[in-house]
Amino acid sequence: MTELQQRLAAIQARIESACQQANRSSDEVTLIVVTKNHDHSLVLDLLDAGVRDFGENRNQEAEPKAQAVLADSTVARADYRWHFIGQLQTNKVKNVLTYADLLHSLDRQSLLDTLVKELGKQERTLDVFIQLNLTDNPERGGIHPSDLVAFAEQVMKVDKLKLRGVMGVGSLEGEAERDFETIWQASQVVRGLAPAATAISAGMSEDFEIAIQHGATHLRIGTAITGKRQY
Ligand SMILES: *Cc1c(COP(=O)(O)O)cnc(C)c1O
Image (cartoon, rainbow, N blue to C red; front, top):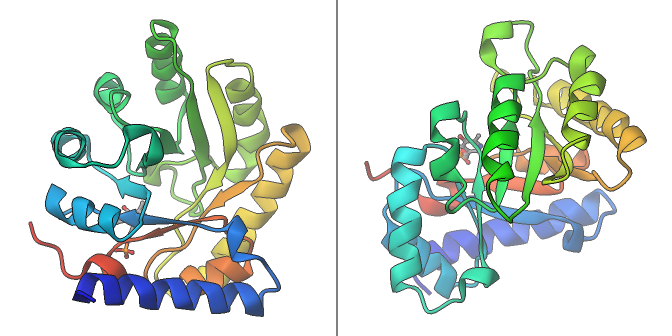
């Protein structure tokens, strides 16, 4: 086993045991390996190791990487997914739609409007998560829980968007429990409106076990698997 495969296996084992402790099946948890700051050869190695979900947070880096993976991988494009997880500028939407299968960071009305416009010209649909702002700082991006119902209703009106659930980034200051509880509550609210929107994107290298306890279905794990950033 390579070091990468060992780190991957170790995280998969920790996910498995966290699920057991939470009385959940690991079948309901998707591991997204965040490959930002690593070049496309790491994605190829992860594909070889069986990973099928990849996360990126900057189009400038992700778009050429996705193209290089497409050119070099023997895995069929339909068999793996790119998750765009970072803040998305409206002028990059068109580019991101060339490779992203899911968007975790639908965080504001102007982004929704741009998605409607761009998807209107295409045959495809896009799976989306509404990103929550878990702080009191409106500058941080994301939908404040008090605005969630109104925003989710806007998203649900768009046929080409498939609302999967909610997404949040837990604070790093020891408040992860509180934040994941807030995300869980928000998820319940969204499910009340859209019963199929059961997904919760939460949990990173430092806090994924806590996120699993709080119902996370999509873990976004980078450094614990990929090692130190290359770029
Ligand atoms: C980078 C990133 C992650 C992964 O972070 P790690 O600490 O490396 O696991 C998860 N989510 C988002 C939004 C990120 O930008």
